Image (cartoon, rainbow, N blue to C red; front, side, top):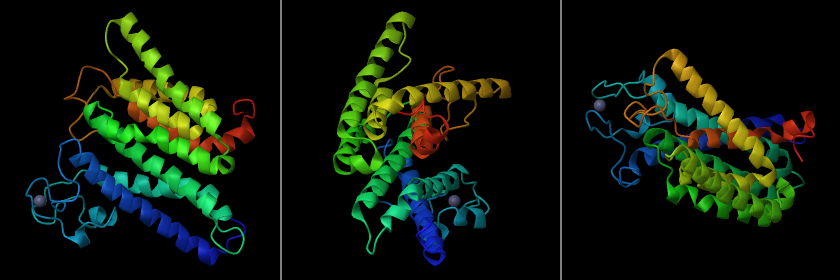
Length: 289
Ligand SMILES: [Zn+2]
């Protein structure tokens, strides 16, 4: 960012966060409507309680929810804090993913297209991952239509901007294969040994996409980080003494048994690697090839 003057940096940061928040707002609609088989275009967003269409000035990401104190403007029914939380998360992630690319995007006299492709591609991954994680948290279901294109997108990014991103097509292709086939094998063995299906094939699709974007070298750390955080979360829930709907609107409580979906933790760990691997390489060079 050193080469970019402050007068440029601040508006760019605000625009990136607005861009992310608008995507977050769209993802809220996608996550609610796609699993229900509804159109994501029509009708306009409505209050789920009184069905009044939400006016556009009441539909500004995060701001409107705070302004209306988390209630519908017509019937004052409470509106879940999850909506602004998703919008804020998408805003922060859009900015965090873009940061390492900003300086090189503005390198030279004109906009550089290669860093821009890397930036937009990584943001695309993060937004789709967010939708996958939320739907999995709600429904214990990884949406194939969202998870299956990701390995291809990762390979495409490796082919176009592999050098810039430090993940060439070999690392990407092997990552997609190992992530998909490797996890499917683990899932199958787990099912044979435990006599029940614990890890779905959907998680293998997520990991295949992660391997394609992050490279095969990232997979061990991503799997371990996902498992550790999943176990910590489960332990936290037990400590709180409730399996109530922490993650989802329709709730874990209404879903199956004590199980937690693994997909959201795979997504969290993949995003962590995407954002932190450069810093990790500086601190723990032996852990990052
Ligand atoms: Zn209402």
